[in-house]
Image (cartoon, rainbow, N blue to C red):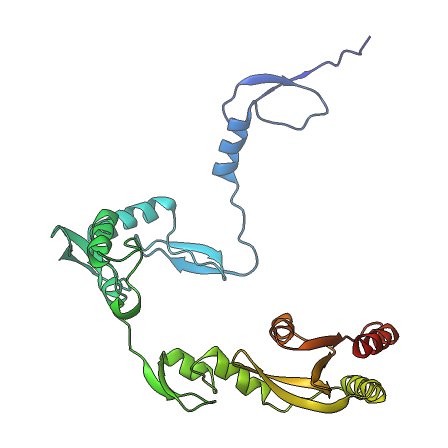
Length: 292
């Protein structure tokens, strides 16, 4: 059977009610409510770290808090009273004064601030009026719920005239494109052609592949040219190895080659892709492909 423990009779230090507790317990209160009431009236936790004195901006009462604190009020009561005063338009020092203005849609008077007007806000009394203004402004467009953009936007500055870096053709672009890019092109065709003409910093591995392919084709009787330009569907491509024999043409691309380039070339030529992987197997495949 469990052992019975004799309880001690004591009085609550907050309300004076008599209660019983175990001798080993240290509690001096009959409930948690009494404990927190005693703590609130008798114990004030010191601020952490260094402290200094502040002045409440509403009642001018002085209070102590940490140096890093950003408190402006001595209590929550002062904060609530001050916020209600600000809503009525009575503004203390250091605050921006508000003023009455008319809604641009319904004409209702409401209170706003100057900094909102400067930032393009504070023109409507409610979200409903703002939505109505958007519908009227964007009437006739496919997306009437969006904010005005393009030429209808108030900050639109128009386009500027530039020349294409590749063909010299004059065209117009937005100012932000002119600032961010040194070379501008009128079309994708001009852009790709200009990039293909740039000097390439190829690796020794790629050069060795081209020499290996040209050697294999020469032994089989092909007439070989290295790095020849070919035009397909209006696009200019640089071919690593170009071979001809008896009216038959064979193009060999070494290393990495984009899929779009291979698809374009295979519409008009026989193309063999000599990749970096499995070099010996690729040499055998090239011999078989060139001999057939």
